Image (cartoon, rainbow, N blue to C red; front, side):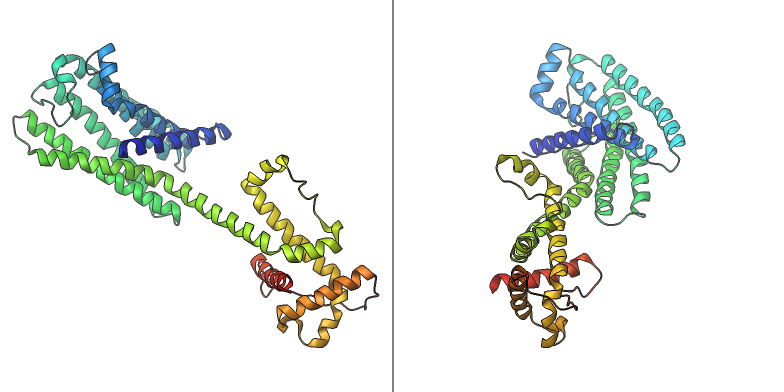
Amino acid sequence: MLTILLGTVLLVALLRMTHQIAKAPHDRPLQAVTYCILCACLSFPMGLRSVAGDVDGMVGAGTTKLVQNVLLLGTAYWLMCFYLQSASDPRSGRRRARIEVIPLLVTAVVITAATLATPRAARTHVYATADMRVPGVTVFYLAAGVYLTYALAMALWWTLRYVRTTHGPLAVGLRLVALSLACMVGAGALRAVLALVRAGGGTVPPVVITSVKLLLDLAIPLFVVGVIYPGAAGRLTALRLRLRHRRTYRRLTPLWTALHAAFPENALHQAPSGGWRDWPARLNPRGAHRRYYRRVVECRDGLVRLSPHLAPLAEAGPVEELPPGVVAGHLRRALREYAAGTPVPASAVGVALPRGDSLDDDVDQLLLLSEALGTA
């Protein structure tokens, strides 16, 4: 179940990154992340027994394990490239990324040669059951493990540097990534030591090998969670804001309806006509925000135009201290007077005035008046 979930998360992340890179094709850090996730996605099915059996049967024993490890090397390399391309000096970062290709290619050649030099019967075993006394097997696991440990250690070092200068969801995501990388580096170093012990004829308790594998199994999902956490947190915040704007939009309906009937020319653009043609606009996440801001502006414009008819409110005391129900009653009377064309005094009175300078303060006062109007 965890394997399927991890594969699904990787695929979704790849689709999202592909969409982003299509909008910014020259963004090198984004390219590095995309290639990193692509290598991880391609290596994922190689770890399935059904795929391994089919590929090894068609090409040769050990092919799946070799391809999977080469792709994992590529995953670690592109992870390093992300940090290198994000450096303050892009030119030096690109130069360093080109230099880092050399150990990657050397390691790929070494593990390929080690696989070919290994007897077919010993190629298909996993790390826990591999015979490390076979030189090709030892070289394979040592070379791949040393490079992965090196690349992940470099990524961990850069991650810790960036954690100090970030905050919010990004800092949380980087901390999760750093923790997962630390687990991977520790597991990689332990696997190299255990491989040497087993190659020398020593015996390693199975519980130790199982514990190292468990550490890796926990670190990989943690790394994926850390990568997607900042984006997911941003999406959740945007969703909450959208829902709040939709609720506010509905709560302003009584006030907006009354003012729109009196001043239809205040509409910023034509209201939706209804029907299936409006659904694309309604499903657009930005549509809820546009409708919200439009309604707030139209309500405030209507109150400004009606303010001369609200002059009698000043006789009841300070307007800002009057209960919303009293103001709503005067508002209804002012709307009737405006519709009847009653002459208005030269003075004007503003109602539902914000007590602060922010838009939220303005909206809070409009909501109080709208709810009072709807109750009345």
